[in-house]
Length: 120
Length: 220
Image 1 (cartoon, each protein chain N blue to C red):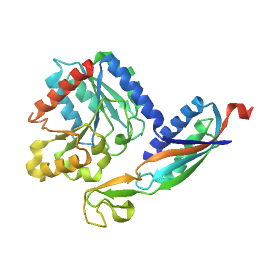
Image 2: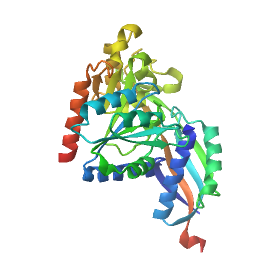
Image 3: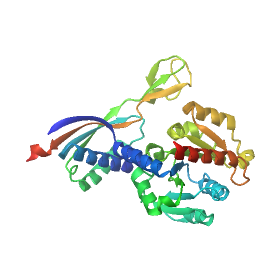
Image 4: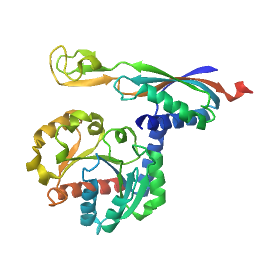
């Protein structure tokens, strides 16, 4: 259900972009999905294929997913480490004063698109 | 086909909708508060009590977002505030578009303080800007003081935390100090209120905050 929500918002964001930049057709959409964003990638692609047909600009598009590694920084010793492997506790000094630096997001990195002038 | 580099958030269109809605509500002098919590945290009970205490001074309305049913809206209307039930149609959160539709249906001119009771869920609602002026999350004592560890985003992005059902603390081993410390580590600027809507304890501080925010929203 969470994936469905994100897909709906993604489709809306792309529809707006298409209007803004006079795009007639989107061929592919590349998303950078954080390792700890909680997004299930299989479900995400299924949800995309289900919804894209409702948006003419997106109907034939392919969704490409890239994984963004999750990285945590430790306030106590200043080092960074892999979040998935070590979790909340710093493997270097054992501190719990740690913060996620990246890996929680979901960003559209690029799209392949055909603009109105080209297609005519 | 050409490649367009974007680096835009997937929720970019919602973020812009939300910003526009916030601006419109500011012009109209309507303070929208987004209430988020898990199911059963006492949102509706907190609101009922708040309405009872404030409705002589402030025109209040409530938008209840639920996947199904109209039970909450009926409870709120019984307290004398305008209420509208929004069915999210299976969606796990409210977004700016749904919020705007709800406000239009309700006729936001009927109120100066509007509470949006988001879907009971500590995960998804945190990720979508509804256009509210303030995000308030509710954590009830029976849920436990460890929740900030499990749902950090919700605590990190809320402006206010209301800890409810404080009258039940003796039965649940709820460590207020530990909880507050965990929350403040995630979010140093968060305001925290401890209330029991049943006994009325702590309600005054929460209600004073609402009044101050409303006055500030109208003046700014």
